[in-house]
Image 1 (cartoon, helix red, strand yellow):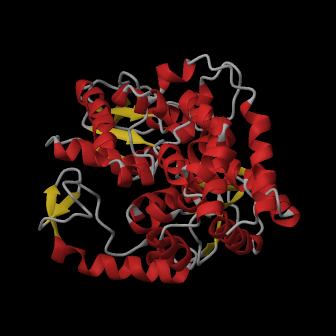
Image 2 (cartoon, helix red, strand yellow):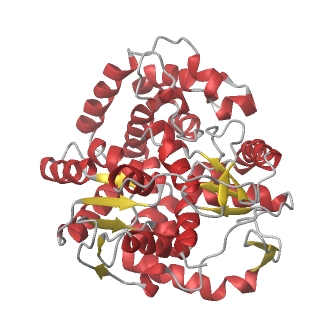
Length: 431
């Protein structure tokens, strides 16, 4: 539990940020949650008004405040469109930390974050066990998309269609890597990320293949941990900082020019949240800032640093549409580079969908707590995908890949869900 002195300091810092909000309501028009519920309490303006009296509200109704704050996708649509420049994501994340510091974590989250996520080796082992036994409880849902669903009624899975755990996670396929720079003269550190490791190892392999093809040396240390976004989103700053320390320690051992990831959420977390939520520890903050400053999304690195350009698409090429992950476009301002990479992929042609940057509805733990709303947001995205007539939808975030897979699979669509790096890697193979 956080001391009252520290809680008071954190609240004062929040109050200084809250005064910037003009209550103009611009966030209403772009909030995917408000579009579904129509409730003022669900939009950023309503939550910020709640936080204005956080000190009093926290003592009177901490659970109610927590529920309203947690009912948010953390997609950043409000911050990206705020005329006053209110950093809504930072405010919400820090407010959650204050509430968790006062209330403590619920037993289930405490077991998951402190007992499992904070211990990378144990987390990996549990994933491996889950992959071995998952077929007992699940069955194939959509062969084209590669989804599964519950074999029996399950309160945990419900009616979800999900991508199963990979039979062999990437950390077993390739525990570590340390290759020298080739023709490019560049060497990168590769942060794999939990979902690419345990559910989409083919994405991690495609990233390695593409970097190797372009003569980029790779440093990939073993025993990488979660980037910490689930923990910090729940207000568990202790576990978050432990994971940051662990990852920095692993990557400190190598020499490289920059760090790349193929996960929009991981990139955004490392670049923005690591420095933001380590400010109370000078040494950790300095190291987090140093690594953040040289972290690139994989599309950004390939296009901006290696100068990969798009080619001419033919009518016979497979149509691909693209969904902009919120963390990639709204937080990191990266949206042209993934499209360039798709256009550079032989045999594919980009076909834009409507509202390509509207949130898919995943939102990490939001999907677990508010699945019916998450599903409705996903259905809106699915309609836009299907209307393009595409055979593949690409996106630069493995979490979005899960949500899109669920929405398309439940509707019975035969549309594959892939990462642009996978398409580009496939196009490099000899015909």
